[in-house]
Length: 278
Length: 327
Ligand code: SF4
Figure 1 (cartoon, rainbow over the protein chains, first blue to last red):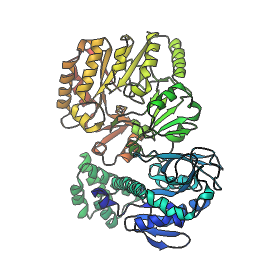
Figure 2: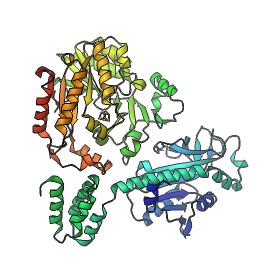
Figure 3: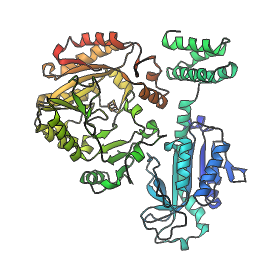
Figure 4: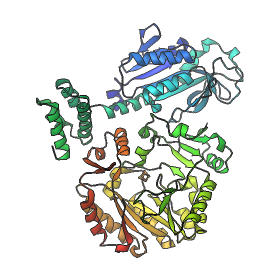
């Protein structure tokens, strides 16, 4: 990871949602994730902000696990979410790793559009079905979770930080009947470099967003020390943003550190500094 | 060039759509029912999308020719605009489109024939000569190699000399225009800012020198050229910077042949401004003091005094009748 990500990704969250423990195994090893919960879901985490939840098969399971995980985490401005799993595909070769660019829910007819990715990772449309698809009627991917995961996670985090990555495990030439669970680990191992790159890029994006919106330290400290109304807090944060954008953080600290008056007076002094009036 | 091409399902067989897709065989094609499903969604991040914008090929419905905002153009009152495109290849930090749209993807409305029909009806309904602006929601010329806008719309305006077309742009894409005989009722209006402003806030926009070369070629070929000095962004050395810009520009171009010249301050609806601040909290431009009046936000420290000062410098180079002020 680059230097910037090293300094910030420690706190930037990326949640991986995986249907089955077989799919999770390679990721748990590669990302050095430790088990943190076993019920109601298996949850694995590491110090770099990565969490992996094993949700189980199907839309309901994916939605419930996504909601459960979000509910137990402290709110963060821009956590990233990634659903990874195997899929059937009407046209792509076995073992292909594909980002999803359109998700259709076979039962409701609803469609969702994850944002196109800037890299060179190939992408596919995907249909989420309620039962495993054996006939592959269209030249797209088939899974059982994405249509529930994506709309929910994108509400929690924003559209541009939520993606699905699928590895083709069966297709018209190698149908589901030929698929053996023992192949999953090999499919994942083969796609690990692409997955790790995607995780890194997605986490970097999320941490850039997080850094952009982080309040200056001086604001956080003075908020702890003095009483601010909700409105005054928002004003302080906006003034803090302006000091930061103007490269005047040391000056902001000088105002905040020793200040012992009321919140209104501090706001007025900060505003006076930036706008030339108090 | 594009991270993906979205196509409205009903347009899959449209010749313009097929032609564009053929030119980008490597770009994934994604179908949707209506472009709004992608473009108008909530919770999109314009800034992130600007890193990898997609092209959306759509069909424009409803009213396509709309009254231009007051003070937008030189006609001072009876101008109209039509938008065959939403969003822009360039990435000017001050651009109001960032606050107006939820998505940074480019929308190209390919049903030019419907634009043509509505424009024709509009031409006929006008009592007097009227002006039609292209470039309100996009840069008119920058996308020319994809849109082929000129090929379709220049001949239309050529047949209707009572209707004037203004193409507002920051682009050097004038090759297509130069293939045509100049139209008396078409004006190429170049938006220009001081070199310091451009370097700071106009990412991806061609350099001033290249744009002036393009304008010079247009003038030499007989095209009408106009200059839009906007948005003027107040700053410490603004007068010197614009004085220098005026010198550079008017040394290069045939001043007497200029159709019109305007100045306009940096200002935009307050709602757009707030949205842009949310996208770019780290941008120093949006940390400057502002003033908001009647729903419009402008930088404090600019205003009437600054514009008057610049107008007076500008009038050292041009004739009064060539000038108007953008609202
Ligand atoms: S050239 Fe115009 S439309 Fe394009 S980004 Fe710049 S200001 Fe916006």
